[in-house]
Every structure is written in structure tokens, then in C-alpha cells.
Amino acid sequence: MVNFTNYTEYGIHSTGERCIWIIYLAFVLLSSLIGDSVILIASVKYNAIKLNTFLVVVMQHIAMCDILLSLTYVLPTMISLIANRWILGDALAYIHIYLD
Picture 1 (cartoon, helix red, strand yellow):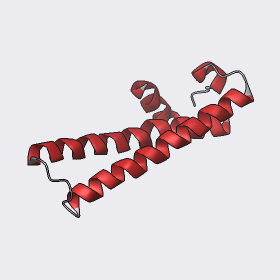
Picture 2 (cartoon, helix red, strand yellow; picture 1 turned 180 degrees about the vertical axis):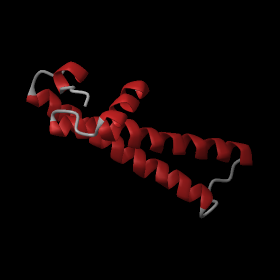
Picture 3 (cartoon, one colour; picture 1 turned 90 degrees about the vertical axis):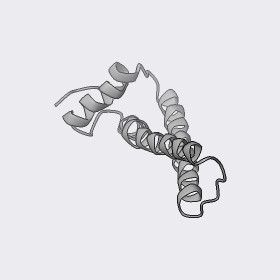
Picture 4 (cartoon, rainbow, N blue to C red; picture 1 turned 90 degrees about the horizontal axis):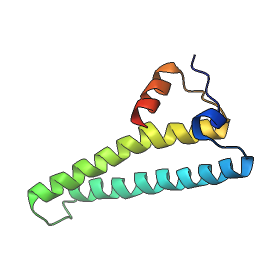
């Protein structure tokens, strides 16, 4: 298993700094999930966005990519900061490093 600590992976030395990063990442994750879900629901279910079809499809793709990035990068980063080490396994560690 890949053995990373937050000191080697993120350069975080203090607990206070780690807590600030956790709060920031939680805010990013929640705002991304809520905002992008609103965009997708409004454009797919209610057809509330009255723009050119091409622009609506581009907005939907950007929202979906943002959700995927939030779930595959921001969430594992936040989990590793909370645990103060990498606990999500080797495969996700290599994917996380590749996305970085």
C-alpha cells in the first residue's frame, strides 16, 4: 500500500491548517454538488433554462464534469485530511495523484 501522510502529500504541518483546509474543501464540495445539481435538474427535468440547445448541453456537460471532479478529487482529499493519512487504497491513490 502506498504510504503517504499529509505532511508528505500536502505539506501540512499543523492541525489548525489542516482544519482550515477541511472546512474549505467541505464548502467547495457542498457548493459544487448543490449548484451543479440545481443546474442539471433545472435543465433536464423542468426545462427551465431557455437558451440555445447547444448552450444548454454545454452547461450540462460542465456541471456533470464538475460533479465528477468533486467526487473523485475533492472528496478523497477531504477524507485523507480528516483521517490525517491516506486510507482509500492503492488504486484510488494512483488515480488521485494522476488527477493532481
